[in-house]
Length: 290
Image (cartoon, rainbow, N blue to C red; front, side, top):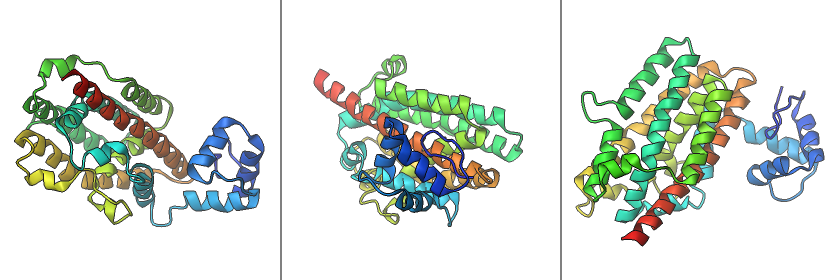
């Protein structure tokens, strides 16, 4: 049975969900409809068709998630991604200061996936992911590469580590930790790994006008080797990595769990948009103090 995408009550069909949403009239239901379906008032019959179409995942849940990432993050595109087409030193430093908190939260939230599942493939996948992101192994972790990028741009490593997240980052982290605490491990895994699709090389195929960053940066002497190294690591890994995660999610997302995953991914995309704004805010603060 479908769920109301705002309050998640169950109903027998999309017509019943549409009638429920049209009759509620509260801010939560209205905001969801305005953001995802239409800002214009439509009939319950039209709404039922639109809702069913919105959640339809005929080509698989992973592809649905990819499309929603492009719609949410690349429609415009997001101001931070626009800035990453030719990033200043301050933009990259804003990235460093706020992403430091994101990466710490990343491994903490994904630890809850490991705790919640008995699927040994998922456990192994997330352990390898955590090691890559946060632990020095065969090569520097992504966390270490981030800090090195900051140092190459003039940031003090201890200042970065001692910094507090800006409010947008802190609010986003609360959303992700809330998902880990309140939702299933399947939804948590999807919520976090869907974010890796932001750096997917296929975003232009799906309608984005730009990539996550201007790939010419990777061969440009205008940027430090450490900055290029950090950006290259994510660019080369995230698309494949997220695809593998979504394959595991799809195996476990059966029946109504499909829509629960979809709703949780949408919450995560709202959170990441807020977090990306904090990178810009930090950059403005650093520009003002220089």
